[in-house]
Image (cartoon, rainbow, N blue to C red):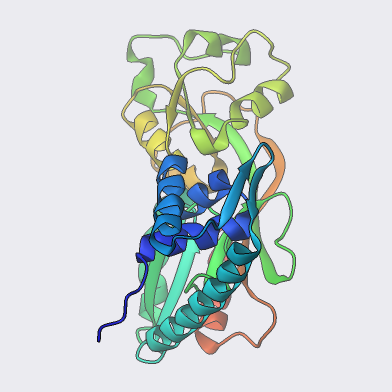
Amino acid sequence: MARRLPPLNALRAFEATARNGSLTRAAQELLVTQGAVSRHVLQLENWLGVQLCVRTRRGIEMTPGGAAYAMALRVAFDQIEEQTRQLWSSPDKNTLRVKLPPTFAIRWLVPRLARFHALHRHIDVQITTSHQTIDFDREDIDVCIHSGAMPLPGLTCRRLFGEVLLPVCSPGLFKTVAPPARPSDLANHVLLSSTHRSEDWPTWLNAANVETVDGHGGLKFDNSALAYQAAIDEVGIVMAQLAFVEDDLRSGRLMAPLDLRVRTTSAYYLVYPGSRKPPPLTLAFEKWLLQEIEQSD
């Protein structure tokens, strides 16, 4: 007789809810709506005929049976994940899986990747872009690029370079309008930025002692790479990170209409698990990254 198992989506939603203690955080982890998680949990309770959790003002509380069931699911999911990781890693010993922010990938890594491949033709690089913090225990990733004011604790973090902010735009933007002669003149221009870097304009304007320009105004994009492209297309002036626009400044595709450059407390780090010796692929990638950065300084 075939086994009767509860719906997998309902199991995943309940396990995530129990582990996070919140429908909202479970929804964020699973990239679905809170309503969808709530429906899946209710579906599982109806399928089992057992109440697994209690909704309270403070969040979600597990019943004794729900807590035991969640623990069993967690063990099962961990075993499935581990076996899956082993299956993935066995036939792909020459694959290096890299996770990094979209703009770092588009504006810095990808234009240089051919040089890495020329040096290490036996290494296949698999790139995943995301703004979420790495979790090596749950993700099939070998190395990642982390952006922040501090390195990630408990991991090996190699500082690559810091952040330097400056406004840039296309020279063609000033065919019909005068370029800003001083930072306060930015009030006459469209400001471009990323939703993930909402404080870049305010940080720069504060350093410039400008209070008459709304640093949170203008056009917002899902990532900085899109904002940079909008600047190239003469939509407005973008607050850029110097490392990601140096080639465009040298070629003249972009220009810096104002001289002020502001260094932030954040930096980019190469990150990999620190609990075990890094494999040769990771070490080769690390060595190459550091050489590329040294040559660009």
